[in-house]
Length: 609
Image 1: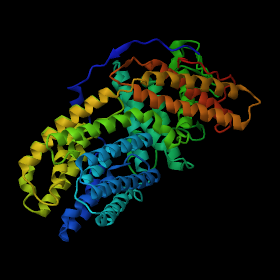
Image 2 (image 1 turned 180 degrees about the horizontal axis):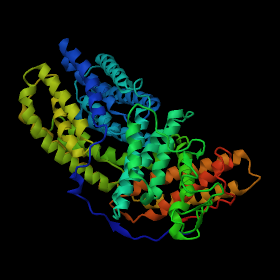
Image 3 (image 1 turned 120 degrees about the vertical axis):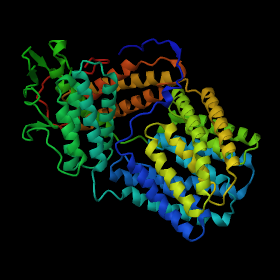
Image 4 (image 1 turned 135 degrees about the vertical axis):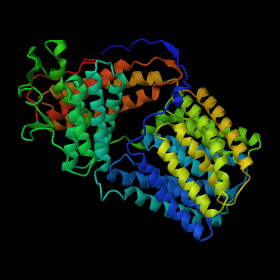
């Protein structure tokens, strides 16, 4: 096991223009946009008909839960939505009870900041999002400053719960029509991305961006396919074979057929039969060995006849120039290892919260200070500053800065939009509800291109919600929102700088050491003929858990403003070696057929693929 690579300290540049650059819209941008409109409209229109539009903020709290879990299979979505609704109700209950017990603004801001920190930590630990904790914090913080009595709390919570149940039904409504819709979309995106990568390689360009996007799309597809842990259906197995084909295309992009990949992607997007990837009688894990130029003994020849190559567990070739064809089995083994990693049950929630302590402290401190400064400036709605600060905190300082730039620009443009929309909204209750629905749709339709663009619609939406109990002077709302946005962004970012995660580099080194040791142990157990199934399973799960921790730690450390440069190459190579060792342990257990190789799998830290 090699020692840690020495690294030097450095200060990262904080981007401005790059933070505002627009990306491509999501292929399904209309789904969350339509879902939130369908979830918000019926409760709001019903309350308008009853003349109680002042209660709409409580139903809207439950309706906004429809924004979550659109990328998850329906079996997983049902659970996630239920937990989101319960979490929203819990935060709302604390806020309403606090508002009924005291009107001390300092106390209320403190409660809001603590709630924001808890919501941030739990959403990060459970990977709920987008929109993660921001919606929950907006709901609970706004409720803190609504006049309330204890007797009203149960009724208001009941309204939110009823709207949340309706949002759950809206989120699950497409399931009978397209039971595998999310999995199909994720697989199609992986195939499209692999095709783009192959086209870039054929054009003679480096294509680093296309390759990175393709790996990200394949990673997302595996996350979607493997999030449901029950026995896979025939459809899911067919989709997994297509994702494997995308992986093979990434292994040898110059030899891939982009047209074929795009054809598969188009077929997957529909509701028809999943296309086959080869002769099913010869496929193993979705790959036809003869079709890929590999013989059953684990050897193969390049199509140009340049010579033989060996694809044993160590991924060594007779000639480095032959890696494309020779690495097909290695890529397959690594893919099996990725699947084993994804299949590991998540650690208990409490054990995942520990590394998130800096983010929670950032949120608590930044939100509290932003609220206090807003109060000192005479603001009537300090929760705007609190929510602005809460929305900034990302995995590291660089991303937090980018979010601050996006939030300020989006909010400033958004108040101008509100000033233009307000005269229309004040024509009557129906006009107000329709404007709110339009802003909901616009926010979700645009936020996928860049956060600041979605904020342009989120800002007037938040301002219009304050007018549900009664119309207010537009000038005061605009001025208050601008001041609170600037206060929240400035104070929130300063708090993030003050509470940097300076131990991030050491966490990565520890995670690398843990993966190395777990890999060596798993390799020894897999190579020992006398190893029991229990020992193999324990070694496999230990290594898989270590790889999961390494990726989470590396993601959190990347982009901290002042820290040692991270050993990114070591992280990638350690992951590759670990995935192949995971594949060896899976095959050793007999969970998958042996590919025909007889060589011993050896875990080598930093082994080159």
